[in-house]
Image (cartoon, rainbow, N blue to C red; front, side, top):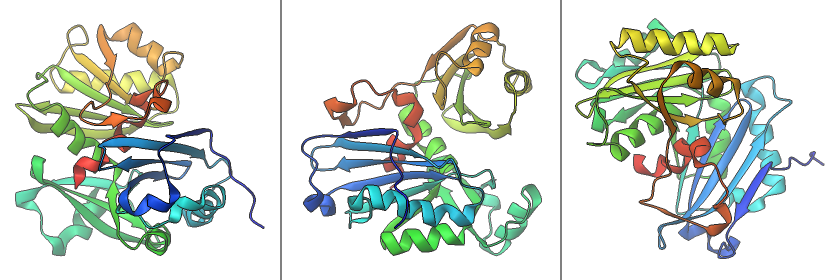
Length: 289
């Protein structure tokens, strides 16, 4: 028997019914070190479930299907049929191309220019119609095959597609050229910048120390001709007020805040204590439909 994998977060509204999953939307964010998923009830415009897992013993992407199976052992309804399913795949092997310059026949050339070849992967792309761009990335064959076994109707997206698209929609006409979005993960972070409601800049940076983090953030602010004194930093992702990265932001950036949850949706009261900025991309993936 496979070893049990237990969630470190689990919230489910009392209205959740395993027998009704065909009327729900399942959104999953998956990467090498973990997974979290939400259950959304479209009829009530309400998120009714959230669960999160750490994959502490995983060494390669080939092991991800095994860990998906372990999640299934804990939560059988995870692999039930759903009305719609989004799987947001998180890796660093992506590149953005302006829509007018994109040609399907050359997608491998675009990606190969910026990213190293990945074995046992396919090259796929998402169209960011709002931003007139195409996101090209490597997607593990192991993940695709397992996901389609579980959910034949699954829609696969790169996490940066969901991040950029949701920011474009949620903050349209609400930001200035001085607004900068920072989305953190364990050892890397993303920066997104808009000008006149158009995507102006997106990049990801790997870091090992808090000094690395603030160096890349400050140099990007400088390259965008912004100023740490008046830039407005909006923070999301894997960060809390006790983290060293947050303390560095406090030290060097004057105006900063955590991103707010999207109140165009409703949320079960069982999630009232949830730090929504940590799951921003996941909760907003529905906008990629």
